[in-house]
Image (cartoon, rainbow, N blue to C red; front, top):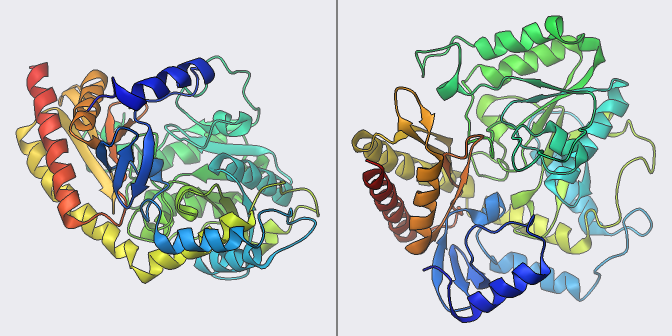
Length: 440
């Protein structure tokens, strides 16, 4: 299904002439239209979307209630800038997110345009609220590609290489990457050395009174869909509370039903102080949010935070309808069902395919880590690329992840039918087996 002729080829040439090479593309697919889980390209080829716009389309492509809400709003108001002339959808969506955020007590929400913008604002709010400047992030993290978020992000290439110097006052600590833990050789047993590392940081690196916030993805996304052990997030939260450090949950990729809960931190019973969301918040319309405890969100003065386009009328009505869709169709439960089916099939495949080193995930957020040898755990980057290509050739689009680029990540839209899920997983299984056979 490679796009070497027809409209796609012409568009690829135009893209190469007009768009800088830094804007990458891994498939060569030019989309004409999409519905649910099916993408149709400009040459009429159909693909199953198993990457959901990199986690943006938990409710699938073009859900009708969301599309209708956008059309209706477009007839009324496209833009006014909320800081000057306000509109009700902004307030209504803020109220909804405040109610959904894990925990109790007064909450408040502001809106921006992207996950990176949300993280930038979360850092600003945390610093203003605590009057501290340091920010702790984790190895294998991904928080964006802007100046501040690139500094928080862990993977050097392609995100940070050549773009220095980075933002100051960013401190990195090891993540709970159990499969590649340097201390625990009895994976999946856990000695919680990751928590010990976090405690030691305040003695070895900097005093806790200097740190404003710790930001973490409950399940690390670009880092390789890394699911921490059960004690990790609650342990981090306890340490943060003890030292007066704000716990910031980056739910940009994990939010809105993806892990079987509305937000991933709910899987551990953790109550964040501040939470960032984006991606599946509005079914593809650019929108992000920072939601947090009112005492912290109210710390900045009027005009300290915000932006021209953040929380546009179109985006806010799309967000309201998207959340309603997730709730009405019980997509959190559907994520669990997708995850159970997928994990069962992949575990069976792992028994017969030694290149599969680890399978991990929560709900419908699943990663398959490929290795050349299970004993050495040497990352199989090239083999991973082959699997992605073979799936594309058979009409299934999925993508890789991981700091070693050797993890197949599954972000299947939660509206996938059982038949589509079976068909896509069959293609994936066949592609892994084929790539593994060729590697022998």
